[in-house]
Length: 357
Ligand code: F6R
Image (cartoon, rainbow, N blue to C red):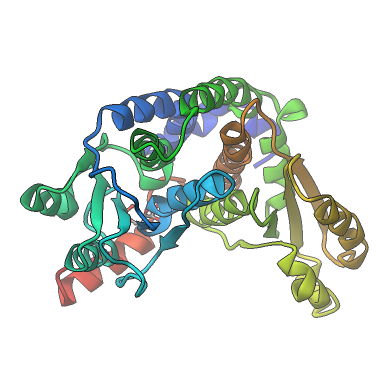
């Protein structure tokens, strides 16, 4: 598909059977709605929690990473993201656990929910329903119900912002109204830049999709800022474009990954690097990025993007939004319907047939 075709949404939007483009366009309204849901949601008892765990998988876990990175400089207790059946040993009655599953039927999350309950942790369930919803109702656990009807990865606003609202209502955070307001306004600006009606000539998401087409995307973020966006880009390219992608973060990648750009040359020439930066990155990390450029010349090319926005939350999401749109355009270039993830569905069905959660 040529550049001109990406600029003709009428040729591909009808093939987007799950309306992923529409969900991306509506993300600002979703964030505003998610914030309202969180502000009205039931909350667990306000007590001196020693740690917070967000347990979930895939599209339901990335909100946990957003929470972890966003709160790292604000909260005095750690936020840990758990992507497994079991919770870490430290979880006890001084832990606040968010069990997050869009469908409510992800077996790892159901198992972790039971684990949290067994250890006496304060649990909040965040879901559209499913078995997680049933268990939360049965156990009289605070249940935050979000709207169903899209793919989990298209519901990051719903899967993240209510957790932030709960922490604010417990007195652990403040000033979040302004953060969310800045986020919504900024996403409204960005969608006009990244959306299908913005022509390729001035649409970075479309331009980047062309660079990534028939190449192996390697996304580099920065620990503590853009690492979440890098991980999200990888997942979105996998699930929307049905293509491989890998991610890593500075400064860790400076201690191993950069050594691996000597061979095999045939593979390296197929890599397109994307570096995601934030104005708050450590000055030494900025220097690292500059120096690193000289070590990766075997890759086909490199693009760089810096987070933008009036608030920290807006900056975190700005790069996620760019990656979401880029992955959708990449799906178009590959002639793939971005919505369905048949491989995940099949895996879950096969597992479910063997050991019901
Ligand atoms: C599908 C997607 C997946 C799911 C994951 C967990 O759009 O993003 O990564 O999020 O398989 O399922 P849920 O979110 O239903 O717990």
